[in-house]
Structures are given as C-alpha cells and as structure tokens.
Image 1 (cartoon, helix red, strand yellow):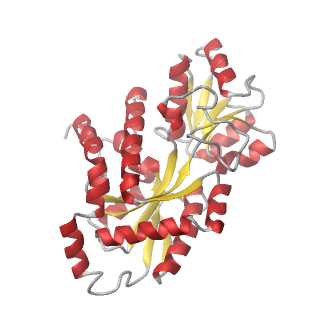
Image 2 (cartoon, one colour):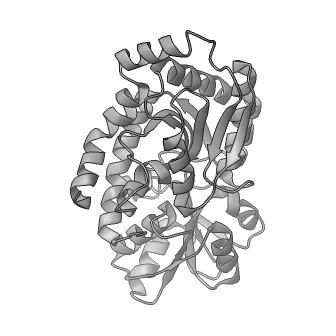
Image 3 (cartoon, rainbow, N blue to C red):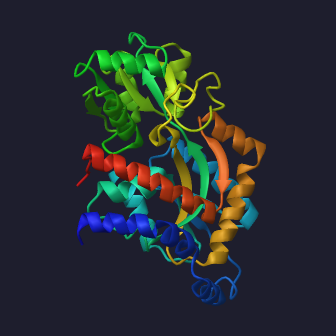
Length: 341
C-alpha cells in the first residue's frame, strides 16, 4: 500500500479503530465475553504487562505501580515484561500477536501509538486493527534544556538567540522521530534557525552531552534532567503542555511565554493498550482500575515525582486525544522528513 494512503487511513480510522473498534463492537464484545469472561471469571490467570522499554526508565517506573494496584484490584498478579528495542516495535508487535482475552496488555509512550505509524513505512502490526487503546495513564511533558553557558534564560530570549545565530547552533534529541527531535526541529523552523540535529541513542547520553556542553540545547524529560537542573548543570527554559508541572512548579510553559502553537501545547503521554478485539467489558474494567489507581495519593505522588501527571482517562476520551496528537506529530514527521526505515 502507498505509505501516504496508509497514513491518511491511520488518521481517519484512529478514533474508531483505536476507540470504538478498540473497545470492541457490541456484538464482538458480547460474544467474546460469552465465550471467555462470562464462562470463567476474568482474569483467570496472571496478566502480562508489556513495557517496550528497558527496566528503570520513566515508562517502566509508571507501569510498575499501576501493575501492582490493578493486580490487587483484579485478584491476579500483573507481571511487567520488558520487551525493549526498535523504537517500541518489538513490544507492540508482541501485543498485537497476543490473544485478545485481557491477559496481555501494554504500557508504552505516545511515540508507539501516534508517531511510529508515520516514521515507519511498514509496521509489524496494523495500528488500526491490532491495537486497542485502554487508558491514558499519565501526561508526559518535555522540557527545553540548555547548557548554562547559553545566553538565554527563557524561551523568548532563546528564540532571539537562535535567530541571531542562524546555521551556527545545534540541538540534541534522544532519537530520530522522537518528540524530542520533532520539537527541536519545530523550534528551528519557527526561528528559521537552520540548526543541526544531533540524534542520540537514548536520553541518558543526550543529557550527558548537554551537561558537557557538546550540544547547547535539547528537549528532555524531567525524569532524566531534574537532578541536573537542580544542581545548576542545566537550565530549564520552558515546558510543553497547557500547564506547569508539579516537579518544576516555577518553570513556565511555552504558552505562558508567548509561544502558543499546537506543537508546544501538545504533550507526550504514557498509556495502556490491549490487543485489538479485546472485549469491551474487559477494556472498560481495565480502564476503570487504571483510573482508580491514578487517584491514589501514593501513585499520584510517584508519577508526579517523575515529572508526569496522572490522569487515568478512559478509552473514548483517550481516542480523541490520540487522534488530535497524531495530526500534530504526523505533520511534523512530514515536515522534517524523519524516517526509521
């Protein structure tokens, strides 16, 4: 299939395929539950929670308390299964191949759901058929970081500095096609800065080079950068999203600083998904338990400490957010020409 057509179909089908269809049609949900959840109580065994990243990262750190809480609520263990690699494709591929019976779920980043379909010409799964959105667990804003030597202390002064130094500056990112890359590329475009993109294999090496001054700026997560910000080894100039984050309450958003376009008002997120065709009742029960977990003070505090905000949004609302975000990121992928195959 022509890649452009496939991507248009992805955008057109997203609210249905990853929303209503992801919930399962009424007939499918009823029949499937009749065969499984009604025939024997669901869940009837351990639930595998795939995380498409290594242990210890932000996504993994959010997934584990959610796994613990929903496991207790459901009366079955929820075991985190880290399947890292290939920008999340390994984990997503494993989810897509799993039985749609509610015993395999995935907790991943927005990258897997609304960016990868534009970065890869061919995915090992169909994002419209094989993946069912369950819950938006947490919003994950990213922060514009700069080395202390950079003569800018807020977004507007940085924009002016980039304009005055066209073609002389670079920015780092934690991978081609990541939110970090696309946000940096957009920053370069709106200033006509012609900045050089320096892509790293992960966020940790990017942060190391930012602290060392090898690159002057880049977008990163609070999880990785907070200690460097607090130590004065990095400057935080602005945060994406509609509101400030609890982990850095004094850091103004881009919008507060006069940059109101949709790119910097859009945030990444951490979400739960299930195999396509999972019964509607199972999807809704999982979403309800995620929402309950996100309302618990200890879970909210842990997620907030990572620089995220627990939200626990259900499948219908989440599908609409995913559709809107896919339009933003898809446009940026096209503008930058980013590709991973």
